Image (cartoon, rainbow, N blue to C red):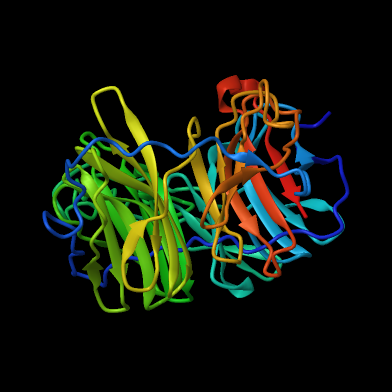
Length: 439
């Protein structure tokens, strides 16, 4: 059986838009950060107790496995525009790239924007509309969907060749002395190395990045964030303005872990600064620091995920350091004027992805502790939970995946369908790339 995703259950309709979009400051502008007295979590009283275990929801439709690869894969990201227009990306066969599309009847593999599939790892899909669907590799390279194909959009530090591969860069040297390739994103070696040879497929530079987040706010507002792969590594924040990429400065000690965009004038960035949770908001002209509520009992905190739903609704998932050995996740909600705690998370959960339910609540995916959830007992991992703003519930998930981890969630615009994509990272080359759906 091929490692490609193989349809095992036919869907009647599929899912929807997954909200991630990123942003960054305009050229030369330094984003603000939340410092003491401006939202930095501080040490207060005893740590807040976790919520009681989530309740089963026997009336909820079960999750169904609709796609699975044979071995060595993991689906990383999903985005949907309609029930018959859904995209998912990941890897199969221990590293071969995969982009697949749901047309309302079946999943069909789409030709990727590279010829050598094993040389790129697709980490994220992001979009602001059907016309602005982008795919990003883990090394920071980007491609935009154009008609039936893909157009290379390069990445920070260099451009991408027509076949999606990087050219050869010159060796390090004094800025401007060489005629060869473009220097990497850490700016070492200037704009060309002495004796460097121009790449036949494009100039190098993107391979020196490790992408964490990407978001599309509009045709001229695409954002990426992550770290460089140099020694020492450093955080970066990048922006596509319609003609090229530029790197925006970050304050010392600050890093962005996730991005969420609603429009070119409404973008969220979360991460940490100085060991504390950091929230920034892009207004179209600058990044403004936004206070994060203190985490009771925490001596440090970081925000890992952000979900932008509307100007009056956004969610952020973070991790607080309670002691040398204890870490605790927390959930924040934006109500249009301030961020506040959304209530304690269920005990024994480790969440990895969030998506709106369209009714003021969220779906949350995490790490399963066994082969499927069943009724939540035994080896059930309660891998996908639902929060309605008051309490947590869970439904039945497929029992075919040992140790599943949800990497992304997406919901159809009408809310009838939710999709989850993931893998089984604890099983290395035996990991299966899977897609679950719920109507």
